[in-house]
Amino acid sequence: MTAVADPPVDVDASAAPTARQAARIGFVRLAELPEAASERDQLRAALIEQYLPMVRYFARRYANRGEPMDDLLQAGSIGLIKAVDRFDPLRGLEFSTYAAPTILGEIRRHFRDRTWAVHVHRGLQERSAEVAQYATELTQELNRAPSVTELSARSGWTEEEVLEALDAGAAYSADSLETPAGENRTLGDSLGGNDTALADVELHESLAPALATLPERERRILQLRFYGNQTQSQIAAQLGISQMHVSRLLARTLAKLREQLTD
Image (cartoon, rainbow, N blue to C red; front, side, top):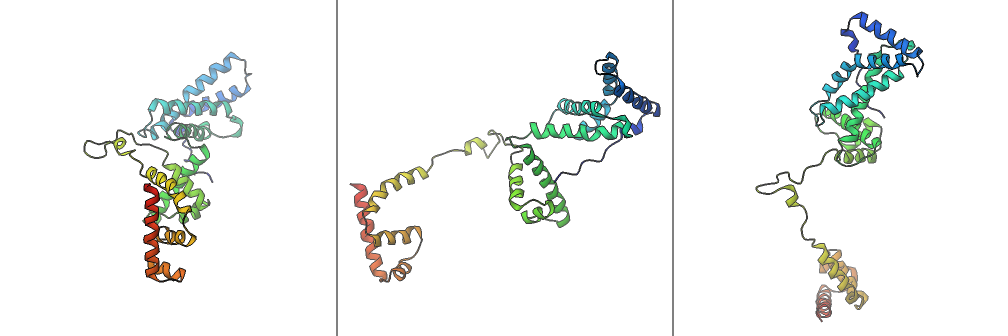
């Protein structure tokens, strides 16, 4: 699904009719001139310059979002140039109506391509933006944050696709490692540290040969007690022996393992 585009803005409405008529005549003339004609280059440049205020208008709408205005103007100008080169004056549209979506598209493309902290392919970027829009709409309608199921129903995507889009949204920006995280600490200070799981790996590798020497019943008791988190009474009921017998076997088995590991 595609996001709802901003309504075309006809900035020609505030221009003098003679300027708009002159532009229309200019576009007709531009379409008639051969590519190699020097007059064509001059006319094309004049038309681009005439509609640069459109670029500034749309760029200002996206100001204060973390990107320099010069970059937004450059992106919008690319859209304007594409619109000038593709415009067909014989179709009856005003140029500003035709050009607005192209200019806006280039500015939005700039944000998609330049402001994501982690690379995310464009299709997922667009889906992430649309899911965010649906989330905003549903939050206003429901007076609470929508569930993944509700976002799926509104967007038409599966719940897995919605979750993927939500996860991708987290890649839009990243915190600096120098971000304060308490008194005299930064975010970087809170990352890393000793990995206690490494000791567990070493213990597991040492324990495996010792476990292999145990009878099947003793191994089963250890498994139920320490991996299944069962009580001695529950183990006794499963194995058909007394709780006291389980206790003695467990103590004897653990003593045997300790002895093998400390030799």
